Image 1 (spheres, rainbow, N blue to C red):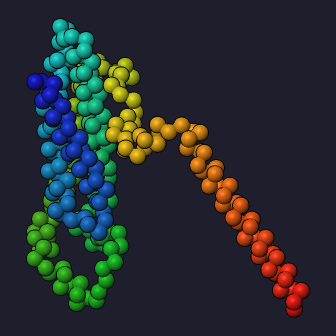
Image 2: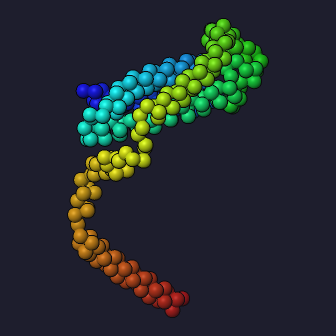
Image 3: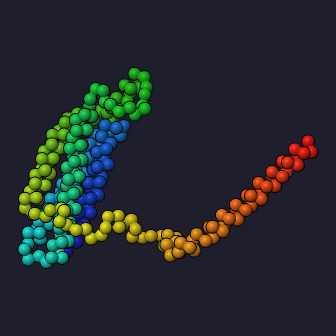
Length: 237
């Protein structure tokens, strides 16, 4: 049950990390807004909560000396996958900190990325006085406080990674995968491909050679007829 629970939590962490990665890529673009920054905050906090839960459930079995070899190998694979997720999460959090600093929400020249929206002074003023803009103006300090919080969370994730390496010694290069790289792409070959693989080279190339020979014969006959017709026309003229 502990192993299945770890797999479920790790799957949730994978999804949260992937979602956070895609959200980070939109910082500073035309879709950037306070809603995006709030969603980034919620997603990374959810990922950290899952990481804490997974660490607690993986540390105890891996430190158990009475664990069987097969069970230990499975938990070590989960541990390596978990470590990879944390590395990606930390890298994206650092990227979000850099982009958030370069593209503050309330900068006078923001947005720095051209979105194609243009207009005169009156239309710009009307958009600036919209209800959404007023709400964001009232919460001007959100992104500044969020960046400070993000810095603290990056340190927490880095400390978590360091503590993991100190408490559980599982070198990544010693863990063997259960399947070859890219095996999932070949897990369900289509019927057409399978049927073609069963045909021998001679059977596959035989009809193809006959069709090529027939096409060459027809082309030669048509070419000779065209040449003969051209000669006849030249003599009659």
